[in-house]
Image 1 (cartoon, one colour):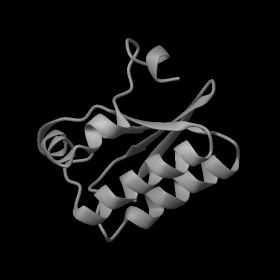
Image 2 (cartoon, one colour):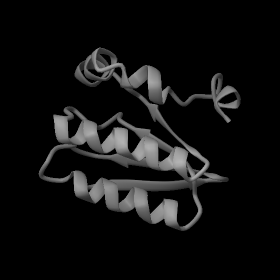
Image 3 (spheres, helix red, strand yellow):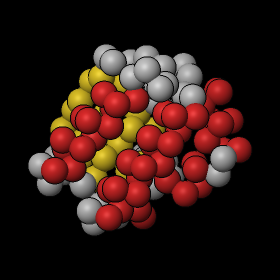
Image 4 (cartoon, helix red, strand yellow):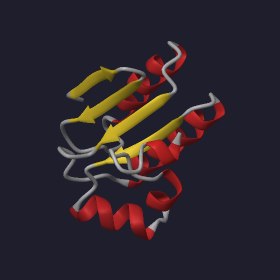
Length: 109
């Protein structure tokens, strides 16, 4: 999986550059776990370049959210649009995980 990783102050932004599916979700999970083990517990998953998420990818995102919370941090979503917005809304994960942005960042800490 092509994955851009940025560290901004105390926040890690993970930006996959392709579909998040059963074929490649392990790569996203491995990058997430690497940052979590390094003590980076505030993470943002930027979906700007993710055209599609399958059920396995959805499960991975939910598990990442739970693991971040267990570590005392959080996972937030960014740039959720189109099919992904519909999918995350219908499954109610968007409401559980929440969005990251300048306006709501302080409220989620």
